[in-house]
Length: 476
Ligand SMILES: Cc1cc2nc3c(=O)[nH]c(=O)nc-3n(C[C@H](O)[C@H](O)[C@H](O)COP(=O)(O)OP(=O)(O)OC[C@H]3O[C@@H](n4cnc5c(N)ncnc54)[C@H](O)[C@@H]3O)c2cc1C
Image: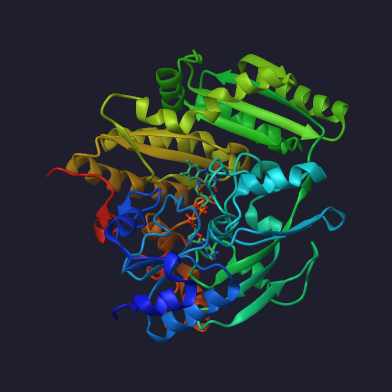
């Protein structure tokens, strides 16, 4: 179906529709490895425009892909069969902040860090804390059920979303959820929208739980000669009933990359753990930090440093903070690709999984780093390879498959926070095989013409490598 650009311009105005080659190119990829061109980009400014656009698209069976900042790592906003990219960034109002109810209401295009800046004077923050917070939108965080370093204490976006306004595929407008933290009435449809990656409806407003800013915090770091010791330390901390506000792991590849790129002089060990506790009572924070320190020592941790001095905390966190951009400096000629980029495993399996990831990388002639919010069982990896070489992509494909087979073998899950898109489709479909038909039934009930972000999640292609062009130039 050819898209009627004139009609789109009538709905949202001339300036808010793009179909020139440069814009189509920019919107053909996100932070994943994939690239596939849309037919038009449309930027609605209000709910009525979203409704009208969807009525038009639904009638003409045109794919509509909602998009925030496009920072998803698994191809969530890559349009596999063309269609309209619905760029939601113009809808960026913070509608109200209600500290007395511990909630706020926002439009989907609000940027995470901007929301936190507006919440700060009230003494509150929005806890999910993705590392992409400077650019990512609340709509995209809802789409992916994003989280971050603080998920170990505060949970993910789904835990913070209690209500929502949504435009459905046929243009209908619905209000879901409530204004209260607890709500036992019927199906939890607002929560269902979280993590649905734009396949069930367009979020046009969200009601979010906010948290009081902690008055005190302290941070610590410990080095471990073996992954096993680091893994034990992490599970011991959680099992001891301590709730750190951050508990991060960096493996040797990550440490080397940070040292190469930033010259921070991190020690040559198998693993570094970085941890933080926060709260309203200084003594409680100090007590928890003391207990974590003891657990580090018991598990052969060395170089243990704990501080509540802001400058020292910045230094402690610097290596972890600069990790992702440093990865491409691990070795000359190897580039970072967002493949097998996140997963979650039971806490006791973290060390084994990281070890196995390294073995799989070796077998397939690529390099893989492992790091992440391990206090929540979450591991991030990236595949580092020569993206020019076709053989490297074949190796990466095998490595992705083997990593997720292992994750499932140890009872883990395909994505902890980055979502599925279609890069992780094969593993997701294998892991959730018993519930795929339920998911398809829900999708069909809400979007019978399959216009909303088609070919994602349960309907993603079986081969991610050949499903689209790659965002890289590959020589045969
Ligand atoms: C450097 C870097 C660091 C990152 N760190 C983290 C991290 O720490 N934690 C984490 O969880 N993720 C992380 N990510 C991944 C990503 O940034 C987050 O998941 C983020 O929340 C996506 O937001 P976005 O606005 O870019 O969404 P997009 O990528 O634009 O969209 C994400 C999904 O949401 C859907 N969507 C967007 N808006 C709407 C809407 N209004 N209604 C319905 N569906 C919608 C889209 O269709 C898509 O499926 C990182 C990415 C990068 C590049």
